[in-house]
Image 1 (tube, rainbow, N blue to C red):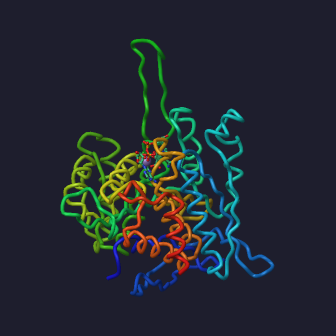
Image 2: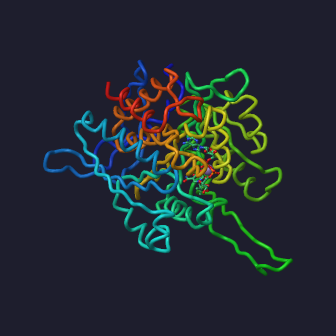
Image 3: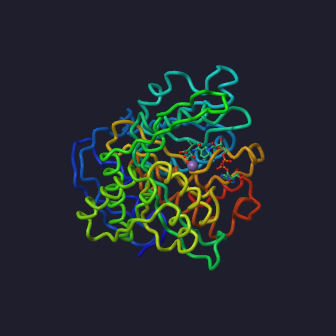
Length: 407
Ligand code: NAD
Ligand code: IPM
Ligand code: MN
């Protein structure tokens, strides 16, 4: 039924349909030419959508954080698509506020973002980020710090990273297998906790300690999110573990999986060590549906899931605070790609699909589907950026998407 891709994500991304603390809502979405009925949220929404303005339009307040390198180009592309679609989104308008934080901001201010950046971002309904980092200009741990702080402070614990093949886009794997998987990355703790130190710096016997932190609560909520998503998709969940060598953290992951899976008997479940998953993403990627992993495992797997679907430029990412107690953040999976920055050839597809995920989250599913269908149509016609073997620059490719989305 339906097409591969973001199928099954929509119910988890959708905004609550009213301001009341509800829910058990049914929604009807058009997915390609079929209608699917999904159970939506089964919980209380604590964060209403944007206010109504005098014209009776909803206002979605979006913070733009384009960042560095091609982050700027792909953010501009996503914004151009949004602005082109806006007239067709009759009941809403979008208020975009741009924050030019990153390397250039550092050159002027000595910091990559102002000290109060969290307070600045908190009132927004969503954050859209291009990419951060430019290691030749500044150490990554400086430029990337605000992004990690945003994810953790705003408790964006569910990082949703779909990866799919598109007709018209050649992939690197023999036999051109269809890939349609979603990695759920635990996004609030694990290996990304700022916990450690370097000692005897500069001495021959210097040493470093970096300890990950995995909580039962954090693991359980990531797994439950994955199971709910698997129920909307192909009913398979794989845990990325490494309990054969990491005998504290990943035995806990394994045990929590065993407890939670008992409540989801309709979902086929397996555990694979992270090294085996890396091999199997290449060897038999069609096996995978929903993959749940720790922060670092999810990070590594999603560069790989990008590569096996044709290129990292294709893949979107949603950093969700499912309780809506703070804004969620939407971005492409890829980085700032200094090697192609300024050349006008960045592939904006991942950013544009991240825009679609944001539209779903804000309660604009029809607009989100338009964006996705436009991407499918343009790529399906073989119109591509150079990373995918095409010859269209970022702006020309984006114009094609806008043409298809507004036709
Ligand atoms: P990268 O993802 O920026 O690039 C890896 C390779 O993929 C490069 O050859 C690049 O040209 C290509 N590529 C990536 N996105 C592309 C696109 N949209 N279109 C065409 N080609 C694309 O990874 P990197 O080079 O390891 O990292 C560069 C910087 O980005 C570093 O500072 C890194 O820390 C940072 N980074 C940031 C994020 C983020 O902001 N979320 C994610 C990953 C890496
Ligand atoms: C990603 C990136 C980030 C991460 C960096 C920029 C901190 O690689 O979003 O995949 O490691 O999470
Ligand atoms: Mn990454």
